[in-house]
Structure formats: C-alpha cells, structure tokens
Image 1 (cartoon, rainbow, N blue to C red):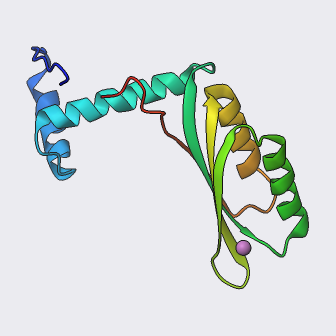
Image 2: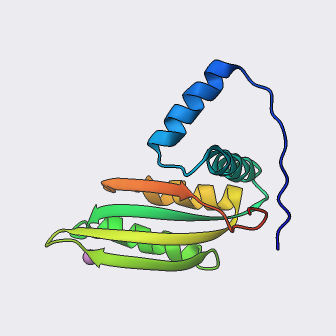
Length: 139
Ligand code: NI
C-alpha cells in the first residue's frame, strides 16, 4: 500500500478561506483531496512544459465532411503521424458535421505540435487539444 504522509503548510488565512470555499463548490470531500488534485494538475502542466517528457493528449475536432480538401488534409496529417496516434474515433453528428477524437501519445513537444496542426486546418469548426497524462508519477 502507498505510504501517506501528513505535513504542515503555512499560508495566509484569507487564502485558505477562499480555497476552502472554492473546493467546497467543486464538491471535494475534503481539503486534502483538493490539494492532491492541484498537485497532480501542476505536475501534468510541468510535464507538458518539458517538450521531451512522455505525455498523452486528445484532440477533438468538429468539421463539415463536405469540405473534401479539409478531410483530405486531416487524413494526410494523421497518416504522417501514425506512430503517435493510438486511436481515433469518428462520429457522424448529422448530415454535414463530423466529430473526430484523436488520441496521441509521445513527447510533449511533438504531441502539442500535432494537436496544433490538426486544429488549425482551415475549416475546422471546433478544435481542442486536451493535455492529459500517462499517469506515471501521479498517485
Ligand atoms: Ni462523418
């Protein structure tokens, strides 16, 4: 079982008051859980800021499939990066619109670059890169 430690932190009373109010709104069971989540978020952000660290990200795209050039370009980019793309899912939302979710694993710099390339393809209506983590080092 994982060893849990307790430690003391000094901080301004007002800061703690605001923190408790916000973490209560977000339905955290207790202050420790809220702080653990903050630490994990910070570690994930740190990992993404080091272009060499191993990360996982998802890119969500919404586009009109009648725009053939756009579809061709998205496919071209993904084939060019097939080693980094773990999976992709395509959903036909209606007569015109498609939703595509692409899961990418690799070095942070390369994952970010690929995400940016996909979302910046001309005609993409919604394009968002979510910076997730392999989970390694997070407990
Ligand atoms: Ni479709």
